Length: 254
View 1: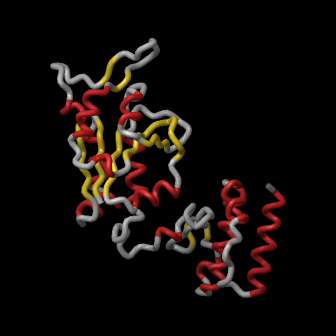
View 2: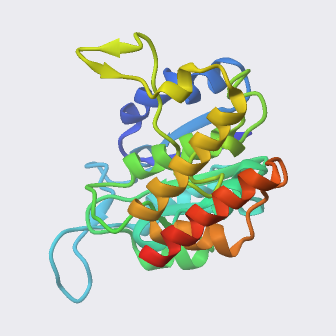
């Protein structure tokens, strides 16, 4: 996979290109991240990438010429998705992440100031994507969030770690609480069932706790999980009855 990133702050991406999941993907040759400095494509002596907005208003707007030329420098750029990280875009979700994860290449434009000239988005058919209902100084941090989320779905990136399919959100429910050694710390104990060695009981405990946490913190996700007719085929008739009884109780509290 190749990811092209258009930004005026290339150094910010060192935080992920040399560390953690993204760093391992780069080192292992699973992804090629090409950081393009938009300032390198400016034509004035000040290397300006922004200007005053037409019609007035606060702040500055990223100009067309350097971004156009930067995009033109990417071979076959129109053949792959182009994403602009924007607070007015569609909220990033699993569907988008999965679609990008199977792409051979995609491009991310990081805006700054008050945004970019609309003609950039229109001409290049760029999709606007947001990571949440809040404002950040620029698109670099959202771009890193997008890249990290996408790369987790690329085969080989997570190595021998658990499948991403089993993780919180993607499984449909929030993840149950996690514990590690020591079993008792300053009087605080790990739940007995987790140290029991009974994997069936542990599986049921984790599922039921996930259900309770999701209903409490993300009722929208819990309703969606219930409406999706969750697969409980791996449980006994008695266990399914217990799980469904809890589910109904939780639904009644929403």
